[in-house]
Image 1 (cartoon, rainbow, N blue to C red):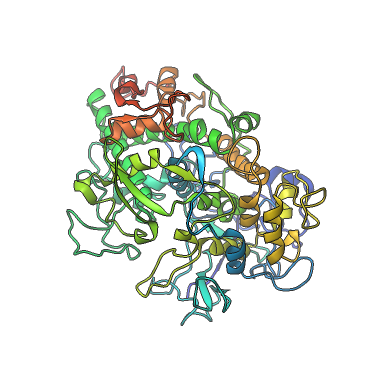
Image 2: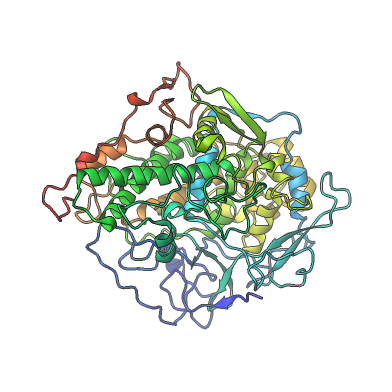
Length: 627
């Protein structure tokens, strides 16, 4: 059995006093520290950093030269409010804050509040499914919370033979459940460390920066396996990602063939989870190799390492420009993005770096808030040809961890899937979660499935997250004292939703964070309600302001030249798809449905911006030209 280890140090630089509850308000504000965050007196191994390199480390270390392990992979997640463990240390939240009764089963909450209509799938009016596809890839770039496993590496069977394992949780299923005919849904607990106060803290195995660790890996060992180690290239099998012969989650329903049919390998172990995610991984691997090959033509004297790092640096910058310039203005709203100062300038530098900002992922964002995208997962996965005619449509549950779709059509599957995502309307981001993941998630050989909404709710409880009101207070929003929509109630919910919540919870303070966020009524812009907007906005501000390598920085070491930066800022998600797939026409903003009236009709890919790599031509052999 994998036991929870004890650690000496966490993310803050405070020392662990004998009384862990004495954290002053000043420290709490300065470090976002709570009694669960406080580090210990044990020394941390020193990281030796090179302040003169323009290239990020693979594992996220040395991004902050004063706090060299902030944002590093395999570090614990930050807390922004006190933990709500049942015993104050490690046991999942289980008791109502008002009645003292047991909290409702996460499956009961999911069934009552999050069940989608069986026949119709309500969609966003103008937003494409690309918002969901990119959102999942994005979440996997900064968060990977692994689960405890058996000592032999196999999954824990928490409702069967491993039910007594302390790292197992059972989600009760009632006898009258409308779908499941089992009495339990099993959930292994997140890999965690115990801080010096004896409080359990979940570990993030990914780097906490938007650095494409999802593509490149988050350790030197992992990255080396993914590289050709020549020409700055990532390994590919023709148009496909390379094979992963060690993936035990991926399922092959045909005979393994190392050239044509296999499980894919990328910088993140979830690459095979759904076809759209596999497609994004394939796109970014192609983009890296195309950039590296272009740089080699411009600078034929550059060696493999230089080509790899420069290509990675450019692609990460394009990625950040897409996230902050296209994705977040739709998710949060343009006014919010400007208000919290995370918007991208049209041209030139915008340096907001603050060495006192810790970009480490916030526990409540990773375990609940950033799971908003589970509300707009489609019940289908599809493919479209170059004329955007539907050529394939299948139920999503038939495609979990199966490479069939991505490897179909003579390696053209990923092109067709991405085209479909740019032309398909996105399911509405609301309280409903499609049955493809709310009832039929990850079917096993016996047909047993899971409920993603229930898992999200239980994950929040086992991470020690308090209820909805605690985060409303943190964001300066009103707390709910009763089940009503008027003053003192759930003022950002509609009456019908409030009735559903009242059916399962004893009081508003018990509402789980995931449920509270996706049931909120959205504001005048953006796709989220007030709390989701606040929490997601705060995390992305930390990602930006706490990243020494953020692409807009005006810095002589890590910054781009102004012409290079302006060229990067012209690159969009549409540009990336056009340049690195077989697609020949696309709308300029792929997150919005094609529409002539909105000046977003499909155009030929030649009419979209492409990256001028001659701007990276080195004027003097062997020297950087960064200014």
